[in-house]
Image (tube, rainbow, N blue to C red; front, side, top):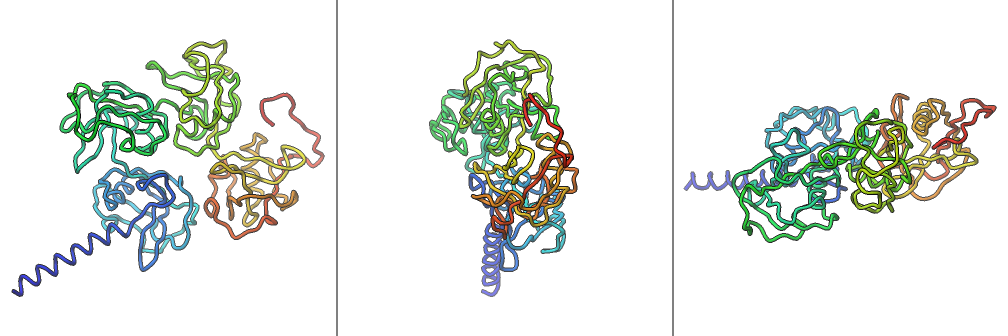
Length: 442
């Protein structure tokens, strides 16, 4: 009887530990339950995790704790900064651990970070296997505790785009047919039909789990590299290139606008604040795939916009389009080079608080606008704006390319009023006797 009581007590303790493990981790602010800012519960309070040394291996451990298996991907700071304690820093995992307690990290609460460094991750129930990298391969989905394949019946680029979005690569999916061959085990889905707006392939119409008349020779493959930005200083900026008919090619600038740039950035998994930056990173080589691209800005894929037929153009490579997926910035005042600083985030223009803002931050801003490192912080000279105050406590060392790469308190987190809105001058000389005329941007 004594042994039975001990065994029951041990079982209860084990059950409580397992339940607590699942409840001690959550994802906040993302588009689905499996993606968001990572938060952990410790000592009676929820807090965040700093991105120092954080990688996909660490993300996979947290996803395992959340019940998704070892399927995680580190998404940088995509879902913004949190509040309260920063519980963990310098997290180092091999990826095989089943609990964060098995990884190396600083003591709880010991960190040298701000909330602008809070980790975001995604956990997914799909993977691409057998390809040359994580962005392409045979599609497999996780269901009922087992990985299985998807039949290619009805499968198009729209369905591939949803898969790529699940995996954190944006909506840039491309149906690769059966390129990566036959899988094994279950064939979980067939006749998958998506409208492109779904967060997961499971939300699309299909014939039901395991209900199919396919064999593994029909297993579908997907590529999430249908669009890329090349030649820039960052993955978020560069010459626009598209993958079509087995080849990478460029896009001509005719009629290309910020709206089309937003579609591209959405495909790449960034926010919708893309900017057309002329031909800054031209010229490419090979095919020029698209010309006269016209988008409203609401499309999920650039292939849904209006354009000439693929390969039909009258352009040269010195007209190749360049795009930036960093948040849009502008100066509102009496000229485009001097005014109140505003940034575009989450579909809305907003301001920046003066706390911590210096000439170094102004230089970063002016450089991103094409004026070189000439910026000066001029207090609140151009008055109060309206709408959200997007950034506070911005700290730049001057070496960054865009202001959102600098340390800050997290999007929308501030203790300011609009009377603190930052103003900046990008004029190199107080005589203001220099001007650039007739170009594609200021």
